[in-house]
Each structure stands twice: as structure tokens, then as C-alpha cells.
Length: 237
Ligand SMILES: [Fe+2]
Ligand SMILES: [Fe+2]
Image (cartoon, rainbow, N blue to C red; front, side):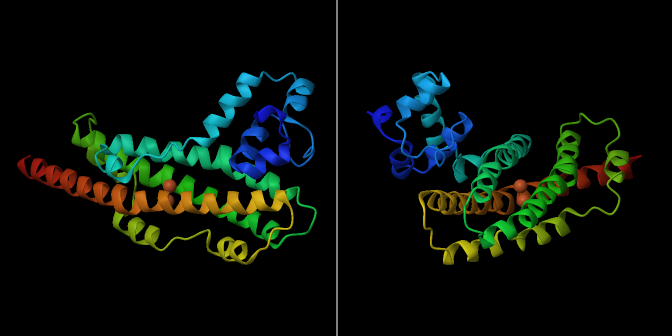
């Protein structure tokens, strides 16, 4: 029975539960030898809720590549924005929390702030320019923008092709990845940190592949389509 196990045993069994516990207000490394039932009693936590949270954090919410390929572009943008939200609000804060609480001064602690800054900048640039531009293209193709040319002109020198080229070379995790590969964890907390960083890296690579292989090609195709329609209609006038 999971409630009779200690927090260290639970996290050792499945590192993902460390993040689930964190969101329930429980730090596994502060009370590693306490049984989960004891902690639940102390914090007044409903056991049912704990089980639900374990399940939620453990189930993989990934959508397959093939399924995403069939998504219309507006839905794809929503999916990517939702992934950004999860990275910033859920996964990254837990990694920062773990790194901050490691007893030893770890090299990764020094790299994290710069990485977080780059990462957040990447996401905001994507949402504020690329996604916005593509949403206008999408609405224009559906005829729901009254003056598509003036809307598109607002993006000035923005180039989707240039963004795509630039995006393919991006790899913000490079430095952290090589650090974590060489790192030998000495405690359960450090083990969880390594696993969380590796899982985050895998997710980031998957996310970038969705953008590079599905989103950008679809967006460029849509751009071509919209501009060719605009050229035709403006030459008719
Ligand atoms: Fe993204
Ligand atoms: Fe991206």
C-alpha cells in the first residue's frame, strides 16, 4: 500500500511522484523517512486527492506526431502554446526548486538562470511574432480578416522563412545537457534533479521537432496560399 511507504521509497520508485508531491505542498527531501500516510494526516490531505495527483503527473499527455500532423494550424498553435505554459508553470519551476535545495554547490545552479532567461525569451518571441503572424494568415485564409494586407504589413520586416531557418539551429539545452550527462548524483534529491532535467530535455526536443517538422512547413504552405490569393485579388482590382 503506497501510503505506508516513506516519501523516499515512493520517489525512488517513480521520480515523477516527487513533482506530484511538490504540487501538493510536500517536499520529499525534507521528510524522506516519513510515511505518506503520516504526511497526509499532518497536512490534512485527502488520500484520494493524492492518488489522483500521482496518476495525473504520471500519465503522459503527449499527442502523437501523426495525430499532430492532421491538426489544423490554429489547433496546432493552441497545442504548442499549451506546451509552453506547462514548461514555464509546471516543469521548470520544479527543476529550479530542486537545484536551489541541493546541499552542494552544483554547476547546473550557475547555468540555470541564463537558460531560463533564454528559454522564456524564445517562447515569448514565438508567441508574440510567429504564432500571431500565422494566426492572421489562418484567419485571412478563412476570410475572417477585413483587411489582411494592412494586418500583415504591421509585421514589417518579419520573415517566416528566416524564423524557420533560425529555429532549426536553436538548442538552448546544449550546455545543461552536457553538464547533466557527466554529473553523478549523490543523493535521491540529485537523482530526481537529473531525471527531471533529462525528461525536460526530451520534451524540449520533441516540442522543437513538432515545430520544425509540422508547424513551420504547414505555416509556410499557408503563407504561400494566402499571398497567392492576395496577389490575385489585388491584381483584379
Ligand atoms: Fe515552442
Ligand atoms: Fe520553439
